[in-house]
Image (cartoon, rainbow, N blue to C red; front, side, top):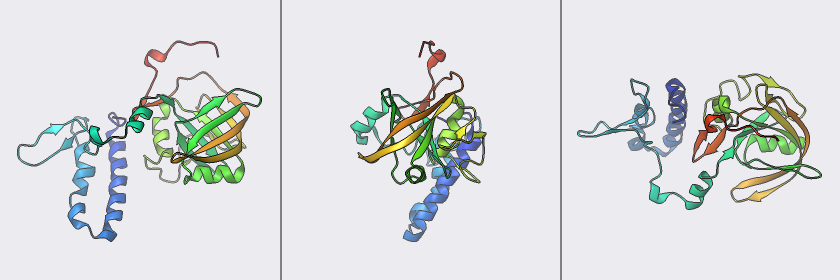
Length: 235
């Protein structure tokens, strides 16, 4: 759905997954599974009118507008489904190195001092860089940053590196998108395992707000925007 208006980008993404799958299957000599990989990964996205669908070439088969890799409803984790129903802001965390990661579990707590928390992947390059530097930057993303968010989440190819494209502003906490509505610089305080993620706690040291911008939200596995732009209110 996220690539419904950008089929070439979808095909590039699916091609990347196809190459990864073929590489992983090769040592296992699973030729019986790899024979139809191209059609399974790429063929379903070749609709001539721009629509994306899965095509089953067996006689009498249907063409349907569904995700051919979706987990059946009865097998989905209820906790994951609950998490999916909580709309969360999409943010980009970066650290000197540079390294970056898309994070949709960022929380700001006002106080003395002001704090910031978030759940990140403990195996990510972002965490390694933030831990080494003791600091990181967080920028809220907007509707125009969907592809950037996918790139830093590892869902979209990034030839030349994650920071090779786009305009970036260098800060001592890490590079931030120049067109973001703002950013905050954080000092790393502590981190601990929390579920399958790492709960990172930090102190907010600097805040730079460029302009008020609509947020990019993550809801039920998709990016969403505030309908109608929302009503502006005092901060």
